[in-house]
Length: 314
Image 1 (cartoon, helix red, strand yellow):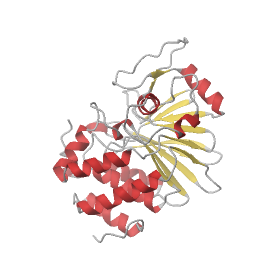
Image 2 (cartoon, rainbow, N blue to C red):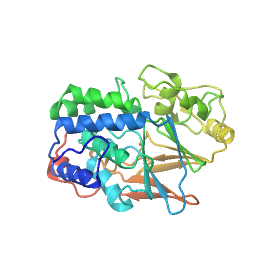
Image 3 (spheres, rainbow, N blue to C red):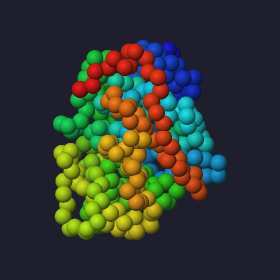
Image 4 (tube, rainbow, N blue to C red):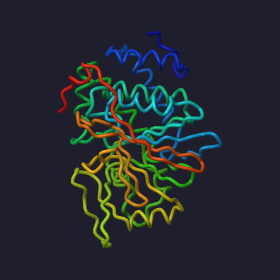
């Protein structure tokens, strides 16, 4: 396929790339590297805390973890419509690693970011970081399909992804959860460095998990994942009240109780979009928001080609 000049991505180019991916064909490495650099420049030009205010006739769709599952990503687009000026998307991290097509998924998201820089958004997840517990399957995929250089280029671009998004002045969208620190404010996100150097706030935003005990506690228990902390309803309520927001939308977590890809803990909602995660039988979900309404929608994995089903998960 022809490679467009930098920053001049077209719908035709994205469509051709998706056709290649559907048929298990690889793009030239330089095509991917050029797109990564262009997308990185776009992410770098925007703040680490993004604000989306849907106007009349616009809809924002929040998607949770995709984890390199190409056909589940394309199923969301089939059901919910392709990204465009009125059909805004926010992917809430963990779009790579674990699944068979992380390169292809990341390429599609980056291409749409270039097509619609103010209408298509991608938050960072904990799998878009350097950490001993994540990223190995993505690295393996890069080495098998291309080389270490492509993996390194993606890792560098991840440093420039936003860490959180506020939608319609109501919804705080973050991969893991809010910081448990009592003084945590949205402005704290804006001054974080764009790097992979260890930073407690960044770690919490990407790794925190909810635990919703009825009793309040001053303890800050660690999550069992090796990063982040557990936050309770007291933390959620205090943060939302301070920032005059109504709801936290997060991802990062899949449990056996999330058969349809989501769970609702009061004003904290978890959205997980990797249907049939790691070859399982769970559904996926996404979250539609307009200026006045919201709705959680669920879906199942589409029929998958043999080459995709043959993938061996670590």
